[in-house]
Length: 308
Image 1 (cartoon, one colour):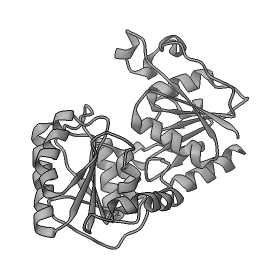
Image 2: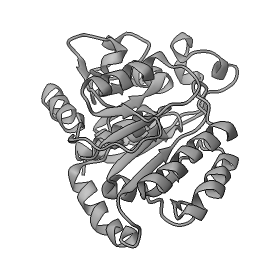
Image 3: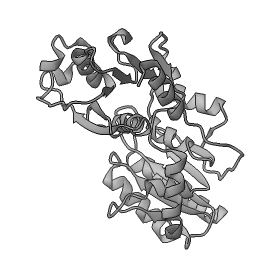
């Protein structure tokens, strides 16, 4: 199997986009995790005069393509670029797109050019086949929980949005009211960024009401929550989580958090305009909708453009 080298910092959202592209393009993934050195870790990567000397030593094995994500991955990919293998970058690189063979962005990045592809959602690996397989696997686990099943995907603090104890308590109380008034089952999974104390708040309020909350032990039921849900609630801090949620066939509602991000706000507005998501105000809502996922189309176009 052909191999793809992935250059990025160790952030779940970045890795999921590169992994998703590589997997759905039929490449074996080779992750090369990048760590900026001091003092360059305090300086935006596009301003590094010598990118390859600004990160800790890394090794790249032979591969057919290099895929980078984020500004750090981008400047390293651009510095390594040669004619032997295509250089693909995901997200706004914050440097000239001409330093890559192909750049994949979202509409809110507002980039245009002959080597730029625009995807309405973040790239990911949540294909219809994977959802079907995950439903077969996890449906027996959730069969003893009453329907409808409301899956809740919780993020955390990220420098732009806040999800602390107060926010966890407010969200948990809204979910508790759903259980009581709508007779639903809440199935909740936190992310790596979720504050452990916030998880304790969710457990204290929701577990006595029959909710399922993943305790971090064993396999993460994330795919099962996507595949088996009748409604998905997802916090607004992650474009990747929202993109994976809207790849399903069920309604998606966005849980607001204190904070501000122009990029994420524009993305959520675009999902609202396409009637794929609604904001969550504590009410249970169901509406006719369908999957929204541009990953397969982007992979097809990328392969055609690059002759892969």
